[in-house]
Amino acid sequence: MIQSTVGAQPGAVAVARGMSHFGEHALGWVAIAGIGAVLDAPRRRQWAGVAVGAVGSHAASIVIKRVVRRPRPNDPSVHINVSTPSKLSFPSSHATSTTAAAVLLGRLTGLPLTAVLVPPMLLSRLVLGVHYPTDVLAGSALGAISAAAILKFEGDK
Image (tube, rainbow, N blue to C red):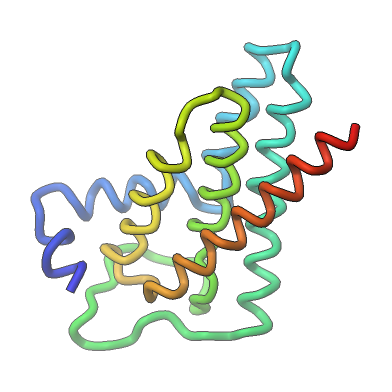
């Protein structure tokens, strides 16, 4: 349904693919954190926390994927619009690292980045046909938990 509505809009698949490449292995979030750390030396530790949160949450999602072993959507009505590094679906690593990064970046910048960054990434995974809705929701929850752990650790220092 999402593919036939949102995915049918001009440019939607191309934008979703771009988001997919940005979020692959949390590398886009690590790059943003690295740039922030260089440009904002007084808060370098918090910028490092963004990178650690994105990568750590991504790693946690990979471990869970290997335990759960849920296959990606495989239905003739679903068009797969991007290649994936694995055939495993639950939870979405893109949703996980994006949520963790957005929460941490939002806390660092004071901007409502979770509301701005997370829904488009979750939607992009569905438009691309590589996840079920529960995959992206679980990934987002895992990312939020990961970000909370980073924030607690930073608060304890």
